[in-house]
Amino acid sequence: MDVKELLIDFHKRTHQSLAKLLKRCEQFSEAEINREFEGFGIPSIRESLHHMLTAERYWIGVPQDRIDAEDDLNAFPTIASLEELRQKVSQAAEEFLQSSTNEELTTSRLMNTWGNKTKTLSPANILFRTQTHIFQHQGQVAWEALQWG
Image 1: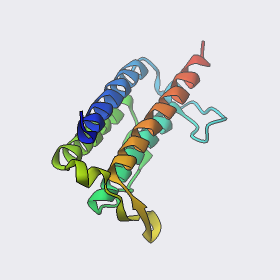
Image 2: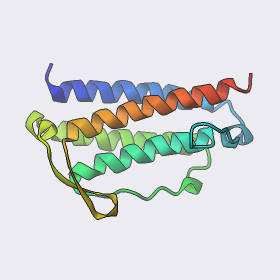
Image 3: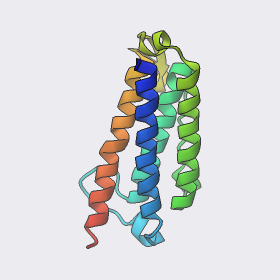
Image 4: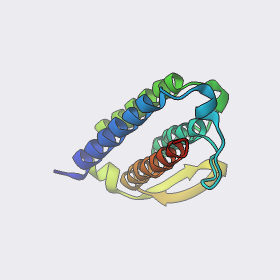
């Protein structure tokens, strides 16, 4: 299995897991998904889910010379709206991976990032970091939900 195949597999598994978490979160009321918790820097389940998705959208855009930093939380008031966003972000990432070669994914190069900063990054490293970032926040969301019990 080459790097491209590994990244595609990792991405699919990450989004399968995230889709299950979103499905589970459908059972919570509006008040519950917006309830504020302390300790993680992102105060609610809804904001955590939104943050995961908009961070991936932003970082997947960087190697494609796009700064997709629009992140209006109010545009995603429900778990269903966040699931729609998840599907769009997942599809965009998968299309990027499918259209890239192993060499393109593993070669570091200068990329423009937020705030007109330039960093040397490889697309493979970006994808790997976005997926581990999702798993980190999934754990936080699960912890927050457990606090109600």
